[in-house]
Length: 175
Image (cartoon, rainbow, N blue to C red; front, side):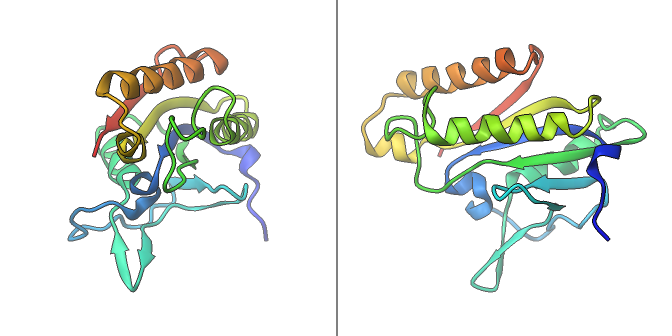
């Protein structure tokens, strides 16, 4: 039987950027994320599944959104009766300068659509964080830190404004 997600109240985390944000980053998997019925993922194909580590070439890959989710749960931020929903909007090999994450670019628009999907599932769903891991593609195109950071802050402020989430936290990681 299919699960009715309209009855769930989610704190929504956006996971965006390039391949390292997709779960192909480096890091210890000595303590992989254990499936938790409170942590779900909205995938790029608009399906929702239990959040889990990705596996490539028979090896688990560190996924920083799951590390964030673990800390979010451990810190007591997830209130009783709520769950976490990670929006998996990251796509490998992409950046701001190559025309993927700018204001009218394909991945930004797709991310907006995914956020709308997550928020319209239940009127009590709320955006809580945007996790960003990207920079390599822009570095290859010789973007300065200031240029990249300016694009990133534009993206964060765009999400805050478009979805009435002025206190949206953001976490960035540059490679």
